[in-house]
Image (cartoon, rainbow, N blue to C red; front, side, top):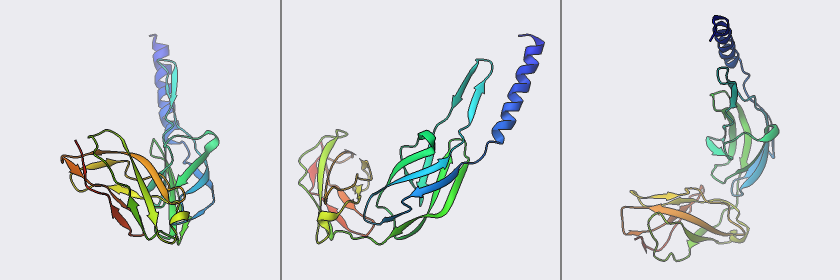
Length: 219
Protein backbone atom coordinates (compact mmCIF):
# COMPACT_ATOMS: atom_id res chain seq x y z
CA UNK A 1 0.00 0.00 0.00
CA UNK A 2 1.36 3.43 -0.90
CA UNK A 3 2.08 6.00 1.85
CA UNK A 4 -0.59 8.29 0.40
CA UNK A 5 -3.21 5.54 0.44
CA UNK A 6 -2.25 4.64 4.03
CA UNK A 7 -2.76 8.24 5.11
CA UNK A 8 -6.11 8.44 3.35
CA UNK A 9 -7.21 5.18 4.96
CA UNK A 10 -6.32 6.44 8.43
CA UNK A 11 -8.13 9.72 7.81
CA UNK A 12 -11.23 7.89 6.52
CA UNK A 13 -11.23 5.53 9.52
CA UNK A 14 -10.89 8.36 12.03
CA UNK A 15 -13.63 10.32 10.27
CA UNK A 16 -15.92 7.29 10.35
CA UNK A 17 -15.28 6.66 14.05
CA UNK A 18 -16.03 10.29 14.87
CA UNK A 19 -19.21 10.30 12.81
CA UNK A 20 -20.43 7.05 14.41
CA UNK A 21 -20.30 8.73 17.81
CA UNK A 22 -22.49 11.48 16.42
CA UNK A 23 -25.26 9.27 15.04
CA UNK A 24 -28.62 10.56 16.32
CA UNK A 25 -30.69 8.64 18.82
CA UNK A 26 -33.85 6.90 17.63
CA UNK A 27 -37.18 8.67 18.15
CA UNK A 28 -40.58 7.08 18.83
CA UNK A 29 -43.16 9.05 16.83
CA UNK A 30 -46.41 7.23 17.59
CA UNK A 31 -47.99 4.10 19.08
CA UNK A 32 -51.41 3.03 17.76
CA UNK A 33 -53.38 2.11 19.75
CA UNK A 34 -51.61 3.48 22.79
CA UNK A 35 -53.54 1.35 25.27
CA UNK A 36 -54.75 -2.20 25.87
CA UNK A 37 -57.04 -4.17 28.15
CA UNK A 38 -54.91 -6.20 30.58
CA UNK A 39 -56.51 -9.51 29.55
CA UNK A 40 -56.45 -9.00 25.76
CA UNK A 41 -53.29 -9.55 23.70
CA UNK A 42 -53.25 -6.44 21.51
CA UNK A 43 -51.66 -5.75 18.09
CA UNK A 44 -50.11 -2.29 17.89
CA UNK A 45 -48.21 -0.24 15.34
CA UNK A 46 -45.16 1.66 16.54
CA UNK A 47 -43.66 4.28 14.22
CA UNK A 48 -40.13 5.49 14.85
CA UNK A 49 -37.13 7.17 13.31
CA UNK A 50 -34.41 4.53 13.45
CA UNK A 51 -30.99 5.78 12.22
CA UNK A 52 -29.08 2.50 11.88
CA UNK A 53 -25.32 2.78 12.17
CA UNK A 54 -23.34 1.70 9.09
CA UNK A 55 -19.88 0.15 9.53
CA UNK A 56 -17.56 0.66 6.57
CA UNK A 57 -14.47 -1.46 5.88
CA UNK A 58 -12.44 0.71 3.51
CA UNK A 59 -9.75 -1.93 3.09
CA UNK A 60 -12.31 -4.48 1.85
CA UNK A 61 -14.51 -1.92 0.15
CA UNK A 62 -17.61 -3.14 2.02
CA UNK A 63 -20.26 -1.78 4.36
CA UNK A 64 -22.54 -3.49 6.87
CA UNK A 65 -25.54 -2.43 8.91
CA UNK A 66 -26.62 -4.02 12.20
CA UNK A 67 -30.40 -4.16 11.99
CA UNK A 68 -31.05 -5.47 15.51
CA UNK A 69 -33.71 -3.40 17.27
CA UNK A 70 -35.08 -4.09 20.74
CA UNK A 71 -38.52 -2.74 21.67
CA UNK A 72 -39.61 -3.07 25.28
CA UNK A 73 -42.89 -2.19 26.93
CA UNK A 74 -42.67 -2.04 30.69
CA UNK A 75 -39.39 -3.97 30.52
CA UNK A 76 -40.89 -6.81 28.44
CA UNK A 77 -39.41 -7.24 24.96
CA UNK A 78 -41.98 -7.41 22.16
CA UNK A 79 -41.55 -7.94 18.43
CA UNK A 80 -39.02 -9.90 16.40
CA UNK A 81 -35.89 -7.91 17.28
CA UNK A 82 -35.14 -6.59 13.79
CA UNK A 83 -35.52 -3.31 11.95
CA UNK A 84 -38.85 -2.83 10.16
CA UNK A 85 -39.03 -1.07 6.80
CA UNK A 86 -39.73 2.63 7.19
CA UNK A 87 -39.48 2.34 10.95
CA UNK A 88 -43.03 0.95 11.13
CA UNK A 89 -43.14 -1.95 13.60
CA UNK A 90 -46.12 -4.29 13.82
CA UNK A 91 -46.13 -5.76 17.33
CA UNK A 92 -48.38 -7.81 19.58
CA UNK A 93 -48.38 -6.82 23.26
CA UNK A 94 -48.95 -9.85 25.51
CA UNK A 95 -51.11 -9.89 28.64
CA UNK A 96 -48.30 -9.74 31.20
CA UNK A 97 -48.87 -6.25 32.65
CA UNK A 98 -50.67 -4.92 35.67
CA UNK A 99 -53.01 -1.99 34.93
CA UNK A 100 -51.32 1.40 34.66
CA UNK A 101 -48.95 3.37 32.43
CA UNK A 102 -45.96 1.58 30.91
CA UNK A 103 -42.74 3.06 29.52
CA UNK A 104 -41.85 2.17 25.93
CA UNK A 105 -38.15 1.83 25.02
CA UNK A 106 -36.55 1.36 21.62
CA UNK A 107 -32.86 0.39 21.66
CA UNK A 108 -30.42 -0.17 18.78
CA UNK A 109 -27.58 -2.69 18.66
CA UNK A 110 -24.95 -0.03 19.38
CA UNK A 111 -26.70 1.08 22.60
CA UNK A 112 -28.47 4.20 21.34
CA UNK A 113 -31.99 4.27 22.72
CA UNK A 114 -35.06 6.33 23.45
CA UNK A 115 -37.78 5.93 26.07
CA UNK A 116 -41.32 7.25 25.88
CA UNK A 117 -42.29 7.53 29.54
CA UNK A 118 -45.84 6.27 30.16
CA UNK A 119 -46.28 5.89 26.41
CA UNK A 120 -48.55 2.86 26.70
CA UNK A 121 -51.46 2.35 29.11
CA UNK A 122 -52.92 -0.91 30.41
CA UNK A 123 -56.49 -0.87 31.74
CA UNK A 124 -58.35 -3.38 33.91
CA UNK A 125 -59.19 -6.68 32.22
CA UNK A 126 -61.73 -9.48 32.48
CA UNK A 127 -59.92 -12.69 33.34
CA UNK A 128 -61.26 -16.23 33.38
CA UNK A 129 -61.81 -17.86 36.75
CA UNK A 130 -59.01 -20.32 36.04
CA UNK A 131 -57.70 -22.87 33.55
CA UNK A 132 -57.74 -26.58 32.86
CA UNK A 133 -55.10 -28.53 30.95
CA UNK A 134 -56.13 -31.50 28.83
CA UNK A 135 -54.52 -34.80 29.87
CA UNK A 136 -50.90 -34.99 28.73
CA UNK A 137 -49.79 -38.50 27.69
CA UNK A 138 -46.18 -39.78 28.07
CA UNK A 139 -43.60 -37.60 26.30
CA UNK A 140 -39.92 -37.66 25.40
CA UNK A 141 -37.18 -35.33 26.58
CA UNK A 142 -36.61 -32.33 24.28
CA UNK A 143 -39.16 -33.56 21.73
CA UNK A 144 -41.87 -30.95 21.01
CA UNK A 145 -45.41 -31.92 21.95
CA UNK A 146 -48.77 -30.19 21.90
CA UNK A 147 -50.78 -29.14 24.94
CA UNK A 148 -54.31 -27.77 25.11
CA UNK A 149 -55.26 -25.28 27.81
CA UNK A 150 -58.86 -24.14 28.36
CA UNK A 151 -60.04 -21.03 30.16
CA UNK A 152 -62.82 -21.60 32.69
CA UNK A 153 -65.59 -19.48 34.15
CA UNK A 154 -67.79 -16.58 33.11
CA UNK A 155 -65.31 -14.84 30.79
CA UNK A 156 -63.73 -18.01 29.40
CA UNK A 157 -65.16 -17.90 25.87
CA UNK A 158 -64.04 -14.33 25.28
CA UNK A 159 -60.52 -14.74 26.65
CA UNK A 160 -57.71 -13.86 24.22
CA UNK A 161 -54.84 -13.41 26.63
CA UNK A 162 -51.56 -15.20 27.30
CA UNK A 163 -50.40 -17.49 30.08
CA UNK A 164 -46.94 -18.39 31.32
CA UNK A 165 -45.70 -21.98 31.16
CA UNK A 166 -43.79 -23.33 34.15
CA UNK A 167 -42.42 -26.65 35.39
CA UNK A 168 -41.18 -27.53 38.89
CA UNK A 169 -37.65 -26.38 39.84
CA UNK A 170 -34.80 -28.17 38.11
CA UNK A 171 -36.56 -28.46 34.74
CA UNK A 172 -37.08 -25.99 31.90
CA UNK A 173 -39.92 -25.42 29.45
CA UNK A 174 -39.98 -23.47 26.21
CA UNK A 175 -41.51 -21.19 25.32
CA UNK A 176 -42.20 -19.64 28.69
CA UNK A 177 -44.97 -17.38 27.37
CA UNK A 178 -47.89 -18.77 25.39
CA UNK A 179 -49.47 -17.48 22.23
CA UNK A 180 -52.85 -15.74 22.76
CA UNK A 181 -55.87 -17.94 23.47
CA UNK A 182 -58.48 -18.19 20.72
CA UNK A 183 -61.98 -17.86 22.17
CA UNK A 184 -60.82 -19.31 25.46
CA UNK A 185 -58.75 -22.21 24.11
CA UNK A 186 -54.99 -22.48 23.61
CA UNK A 187 -53.34 -25.24 21.59
CA UNK A 188 -49.57 -24.89 21.53
CA UNK A 189 -46.39 -26.88 21.05
CA UNK A 190 -43.89 -26.84 23.92
CA UNK A 191 -40.62 -28.60 24.82
CA UNK A 192 -39.48 -29.75 28.28
CA UNK A 193 -36.04 -30.63 29.57
CA UNK A 194 -35.93 -32.27 32.98
CA UNK A 195 -33.69 -34.51 35.13
CA UNK A 196 -36.83 -36.37 36.23
CA UNK A 197 -38.78 -39.21 34.63
CA UNK A 198 -42.08 -37.60 35.54
CA UNK A 199 -43.20 -34.02 35.09
CA UNK A 200 -46.18 -31.73 35.27
CA UNK A 201 -46.95 -28.48 33.49
CA UNK A 202 -48.13 -25.34 35.29
CA UNK A 203 -49.87 -22.36 33.66
CA UNK A 204 -50.40 -18.99 35.30
CA UNK A 205 -51.53 -15.47 34.43
CA UNK A 206 -50.73 -12.00 35.72
CA UNK A 207 -54.03 -11.92 37.64
CA UNK A 208 -52.85 -14.75 39.89
CA UNK A 209 -54.69 -17.76 38.43
CA UNK A 210 -52.73 -21.04 38.29
CA UNK A 211 -53.46 -24.56 37.11
CA UNK A 212 -51.45 -27.78 36.89
CA UNK A 213 -51.63 -30.68 34.49
CA UNK A 214 -51.63 -34.36 35.34
CA UNK A 215 -48.26 -35.88 36.17
CA UNK A 216 -46.96 -37.49 32.98
CA UNK A 217 -44.03 -39.73 32.07
CA UNK A 218 -41.03 -38.01 30.47
CA UNK A 219 -38.70 -40.59 28.95
